Length: 281
Image 1 (cartoon, rainbow, N blue to C red):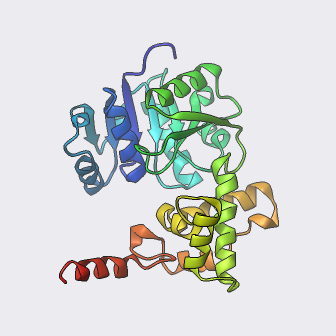
Image 2: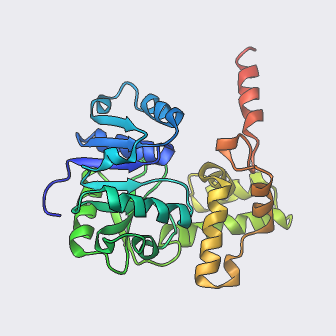
Image 3: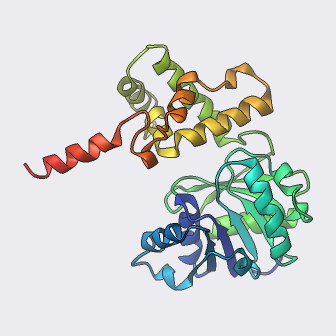
């Protein structure tokens, strides 16, 4: 693709998709944001409220409305089966020159591309959470991703004001290949009674200058997402050191998914209640 990207489609109006849509719209790019949940679309518009970017943002529940996009970025649930189904549908809807990008943090781009008839135009474009603030985009080439698709995607990320790093198509890519085992080890440290969750997080924040402790970060990411990535690492790399900690599995089974559910490693319902009560004193 040699022409400037003028229209972008984003599939998924969660925190990641909404953030990506805002990034693009704020730079004058026409954005079609798709989600089957009207409430998610409404939250996304509220997320962008007061921004001039809203004039460039169009919300839709019809996937067909993305047909004119130059690039479509998928930001849905971290499930290979669900993503492959979506890519197959997008392949039929999108114009021939359109690049199909995935915001996946760990799933094989090559396997996603195999669900389409345009594997040379499928690429990984992994934004960090939250996309408007975090400065990094991790670009991942599949086995057949063309140089033209890579160049156009890299230019788009830089247009968003991001620093780009490039990864080969291996499980977890760069960031999560390193980050998730650290988070998993933090869960093992808690699971085996080495220290309290507070001391584990404080230790990593003050001892290694991390802005957020690993357990606190896991809650922010979502424990279900962390578990999904650990399973991909374990299965794809075949190494026992990537086996998910039983405590992480238990928390997910119990529905303790982190901030989005109000409870994970930490209880956020309690924090909200205490804040509310302190405001009355």
